[in-house]
Structure formats: structure tokens, C-alpha cells
Length: 279
Ligand SMILES: Cc1ncc(COP(=O)(O)O)c(C=O)c1O
Image (cartoon, rainbow, N blue to C red; front, side, top):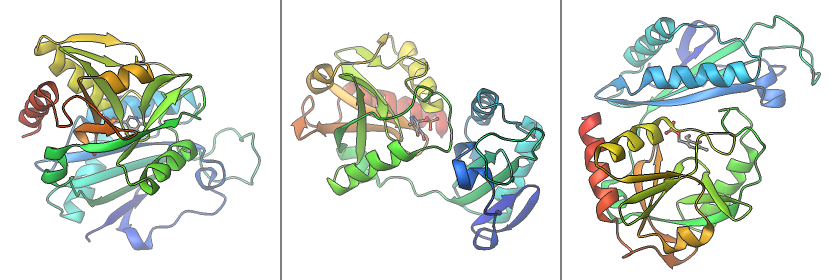
């Protein structure tokens, strides 16, 4: 079974997987999710993703039905059935199925879905050259720390970037950089990293946490505050972090060249350390 799905306890081919139309995930985006990737065929930082899944579910008063051990078992089984060299694992829990009403009944049975697809890493040429980005107004709600299914502002921002022919939309709220549409944003000033703090303005990335730990170990300075748009343009380097982008240099933003216009030494050195961790 290549592309594999898991729906509330049952594995089946992805193309055959279905959920009822009155699932609240479909009707309201009433649910949470995680994206995990494998390195060497094993899920990377499963505990951290599980902890964030629990935090997100708790914040929405949603029952997360499985323990870490159960998830570990289902993921291992899914990876075995799918049989890819490297996989992208998508987990989603919705509040469940009920007649459409904004308020929800108590004790709904959550719908748990997992999909396993082949992971296609960014081409090494793209990684080596870096990417373009554009700034887009951050139109999201006040709890971006919850990894909820409600992604419309992210979807529209990413689409805007795609239509502009750039890789990522960097979200700016009240003149301050929060994060990317699918990534966290790191601004480098010399030997200091500046990035938005954990809290309601951003999704606290698992990759962000790994990279900040590497940065501390490298002796880099760290400022957890939202960089201004001016700081973004004037940075010596800018890079993105995320499960699928890993560490990705941004060499132009809104058509303005960042630093030398090539991935800089801080980004390259952190990317090397990151690659060592995931080898
Ligand atoms: C809005 C947003 N910020 C940050 C991230 C990076 O998070 P992680 O490193 O856990 O993949 C993602 C990942 O999907 C995201 O969607």
C-alpha cells in the first residue's frame, strides 16, 4: 500500500479514505493537526510533535485520544505499510461528527486521521541557492500557537507568494515580522539571531526549537522579539525553519537583496549542524 491513510483505527489506501460530511473538521475546521517527517525512515522529534498536538487539542477543549506509545505504534505500522524511503506523516484530530451547529455537543467521538505520503525534499540546488520571499499582511487570529485546521490566512498568503513566483510569504503584523505561512522566520544580524517569541503570535516550530538550541551551542546571540520590516530588509541573513523546509536561506525579500544575496555563514553553519542531527 503506497500512499496510506489511517481513519479512526483502520489503515487503508489513501485514495479510499473518507470522512462523513458532517465531520466538524470539514464543516468548521474544528480540529488540530501535526506534520512530522522521517529521517532514515524514523519520525523526527515525535515527542515534541506529540506534546504540541496535546497542547493544541487542550486549548480547543478537544479530546486527543491516543497516548504517545499508541501514536508511535500506529505511525510505525503506517510507515511499514507505505514503504517509502522517507515519509511525510500528517496527523489530524477533529472534534467528530455532529449535526451542524457552531456550539458542540459534549462527549463527541473525535475523528482521527493520519496520512503517509512520500517525502519530497527540496532540490539541493534550491537549498544551496536560497529562495525569494515576499511580505504579506498577517491576517490571522489571536491564537496562532494552536496548530488548528483553520489555515485560510496561511493558505491565501502562500497562494499570493506562489502567484508572485516566490517561495514563501513572510507574515507582518503591525510592522513586525511574525513568521512565514508554513515556517518560522529567523533574522540574522551579524552573530545574533532574532525571531518572534513563543506565544500567541506564532506557531512554535519543532524545527525552530532545534535550531535555537544549535544556535546557543554555536555561541550565537539570541533575541526572541519580532523583528521589524526594516530589520528584515537590513538583515545580514534571513532563513526559514520548518519540518518540510528544514533550514532554508532567503536571499531576496520583496525584490530587495538580503545580505550578499547568497546563503550566509550563520545559516550555512546551522544547516550543517542540523544535517548532522538528522543524519
Ligand atoms: C505557520 C507555521 N509556522 C511554523 C511552522 C514550522 O513548524 P515545524 O518546525 O514544527 O514544522 C509551520 C509548519 O507547518 C507553520 O505552518
